[in-house]
Length: 83
Image (cartoon, rainbow, N blue to C red; front, side, top):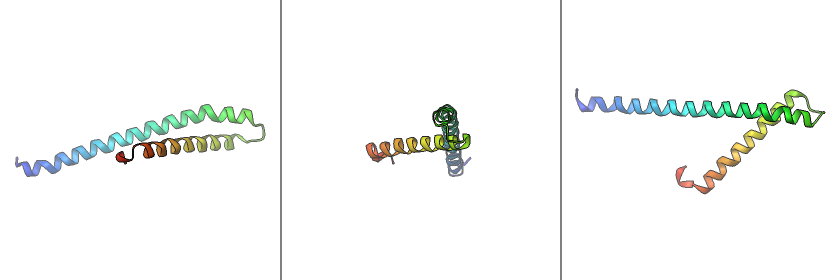
């Protein structure tokens, strides 16, 4: 086979592998966030008697999102060359 014909196929293969790794990383991150929310929301619900259960889960997810954003922004500030 001609080398020029093989190069685009190799690039496509590399791109697909990278995409699958990103999907896997995103899925694992989402799973960990949901598991953490399962630990945080009942504690929040038990602490405040006036919140409904759905509101406690929403506040737990919001708290996790704020913490994740703070970690991301800290990484961007400390290592700007990566981004």
